[in-house]
Length: 252
Image (tube, rainbow, N blue to C red):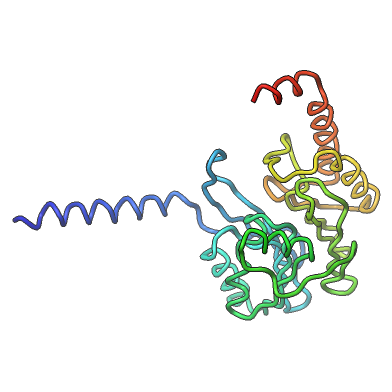
């Protein structure tokens, strides 16, 4: 009988752990275009609650390219399993910036010998945080992960100073990642707000023929998401320069 309280505590603790894990929805993968799949993973983020983050799996015949990793290693493993279960071959990944909602799965992908890519600047920022870097990097404004099919493009700083986007010209699909926003600019801790409007304008000009725009968070949209991103960035710059903002900043 004396062991009953201890047993109860252990059961209760296990139940709480299980319950906490159950609060996170499973990884979701859905087709949004021929050869393009949206993957969405979930994580609880302090100050933001339950956050859903988007990425893509882009097919070139049977070869699968992962655009941004899920936020947790378990979900990255599940995504690789999904690729394999559907008869595809995971050929490589590209992380569009150094935050965890883009690059947290790099260590797992490295561990199973799936080539990982990021810009040189992204790798430097990951290294600065003492995290595992992508195995391969590039140092150019435009980089073709797959020639004529998957282009990585640096529009300039915005959400972060290293953010890139990924363009699939034959599908007219643009993965904007966390550079692209809807309703709010979101987390600004690593942003370069002053550069964001011009960077957004560069995307609007370069990808005027875009059909689908995929943000890092939120629903898939069209070119209006790029227009809204520019508007939000301009408003953010104006707000930062306003006397009220200066007063608030000086009082903190």
